[in-house]
Image (cartoon, rainbow, N blue to C red; front, side, top):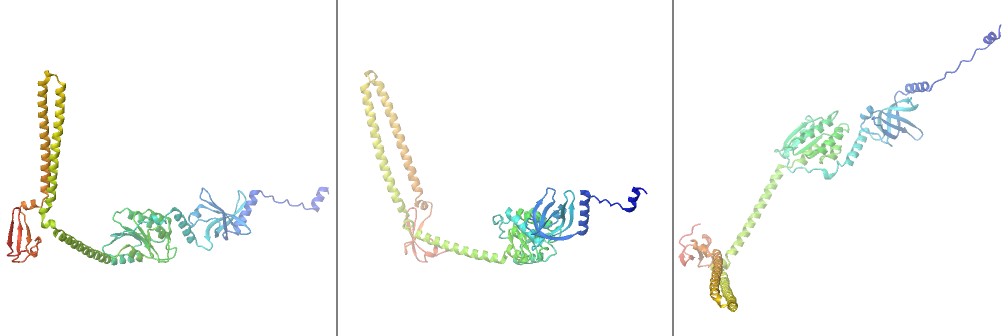
Length: 458
């Protein structure tokens, strides 16, 4: 037996250990983890939340002692009602796995729920904060409601109780107001898009005075269509005032904050939008009565002022109005004549001086020419004087004619007369001021008549 055979018979050689490559050990660990934790719920705090350009979200879920990386792919994130943020306490459902390229232990997230606050409530608060920052809730952008709407556009379900309540209240308050319904889903998939489309469609019409959107009460899930951003944007873009009437008095939606007016219920919306026709009619009747009374008071005031004017001396003795203007006219004529006399004297003096200077300056041979020129000058001067005097006389005649046109006596020249009562001495302007048998004096353009009243005719 050789030495080699002896060793083989007495000893079994040791088995060599299996050597893993990095890829192999990572793949095996991944398989073990995925088999052990196919789906698992994990609670923790979100940290280092990052949204990649691809739409995938990456973050760390941690507690006081440990942390784990998480991936939320775009397909799962788009379907979520809210966006996770750093510091959120969440409960997530996912698969534990290993990212082989880096050997990282991570969780592929399939669902995320806020802890202590529901997903819908979280989404509500996030959208509310976003739209508030954009100014969609500002009071200065809200439109006033029309005082008397004659046509109301309503966006709601045609089968719901809301439309029946709205129509009933509108008909009761003002049967003259018409309603145009845009039928739309008010809950479920596609409801928000239909509501927004209804607002846009009603804005294309020219006869809609105000729009009411709403539905009856329900859970936050039932009312969620009115919390969608599409509805909020449609309300903000509406050129027609929008009233939100969603749910019951305790329910608030995003639409309530954006709308020009929030009504606690559909019935309350109709009460706020449509005034009572009977109340308006009563107000008009009251205002009409007040206006008539005021007009009667004004007429009586004017009548008293007219009586006061008629009783003045001017109307009793109208000729006196000419006394002062006639006196002023005489004064003006005198001043004019005096002015003309002085002007002629001045011109004559100037002429005499010139003639004297001419005689002194001219040689004897030019005396005849001088006299001829003097004669011509005198003739021109006389013509100018005559022209000036004629112009002044024409102006004086015009002033006298205008003054005469203002005289009340001209009225008498046209055939009218002034009748005064011999009993009272006042002018008679109504047949009720005299009685049968009274004597009156009738003043004509020329002369007067004394007469007796035989009969009064109204």
